[in-house]
Length: 356
Length: 204
Image (cartoon, rainbow over all chains, first blue to last red; front, side, top):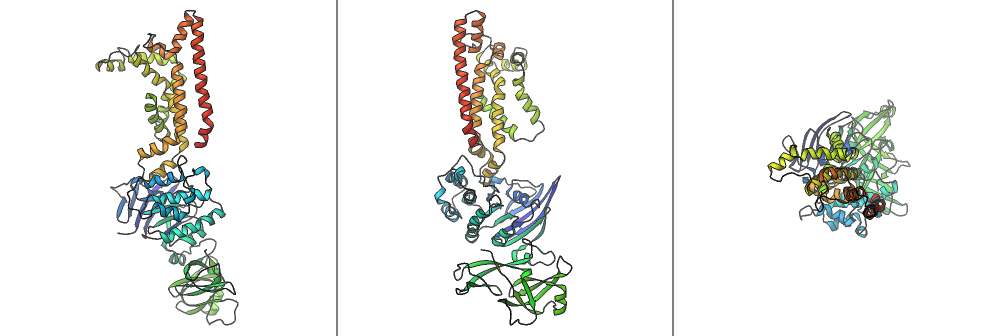
């Protein structure tokens, strides 16, 4: 059976963890939540660094923990990237990379060369860790985890120890990993930006419990408990660049439901991008708007309407093609336009944020 | 050497355990630091003597009595110098912390593997300090040796006791030359330890 089945129950004096998750066998799974929500503890339980008294963990059909079994960390086919790079200071970069590689059999899903290439660390191999910058250390530690040929990669806020500039330097490497890897990546983060850029599947945690769990787009458009990445509700769409209008510095990106114009960032045609559309940037009209400064107009059907956290506001979920978008409207607007579920509406999207 | 073999596991255990009896064990290991050496020697003498538990055990094994033999001296020295081995090592192991070993485990290293490939290299400065201190301390001890070893030339006579004998016999010249050798030796050893330290800090 493919995928990850994880159930853990843990009672500490100041903290309880109680989760029951089914996670997909591919893609980036983000564990998202505030610090203290139990994300790292959950990750440590999956790695076997923490032993939950009650737990069941099955990874791609292999039992790692249940009532009878307990597989020690070093027997689990995983890679773990710690918050600090935690390189071995007594070994060179190459020595660090080989530490895990030497201890596993040969059939590598990711070869050492590929890991070195993906993370761009070929010029660092002979150095000792104390001669590396923070960003370089992070990259080496990710490559080291990959070199051990994991069936699953666990990353515990790998960017949190870095400043903003270093983060920007690493994220492209993570996006490359995302495309190249065939193994699931469980990515712990409290950064909305990282999740929006990298995640395919979102698990939101709070106080040791799972608040929501599902594919990113689906989870972000849940109206029963609006999940906010950052300060506002919104959706993230995977899209492809289909047209570039160089005279106006615009690019048109297509998603599963329509196309949107956005700023051109030196894109090339058919490049894959991620865009974020916030609920506050979407307004609705019952007729095709003709004269408007807003360039992005989509047609869709109202799927559901729910109260927002302010008594005067509502969140409207609109189905556009196969995707859902959220719009934030005042209650009065909903009443005066008489918007109801199933109705055809026009969406005006004021701004599209590129996650690139 | 013997101390390295005995001291390392004790230090490792003391650095990593969360058991309640960590305190008592640590205290017992540290006892020789506080006790007058003659007290320790006295108890060891009793234990290893013909009526002591250890003595009866060695007799049953057919080894005979240990006091006033070279091996008796070695055992006494081990007890006496153990804290000098265990404490620097324990500090070194504690300074490494949990993390590098967790990293090793996620890279498929079994605990024993991780101990030798990660903990020992990282604690190397601690090992060197501990070994030098222990060796020097063993050479310099006096009270325990006198109690257990006696003073049999070529068998259990050690430098410190010999100096004592020379002074007792008012042979100041011989005492002088031996003492000078000891002084220079001790200084050299400590010099090594203290010049090694700064580089050790960087590695840790």
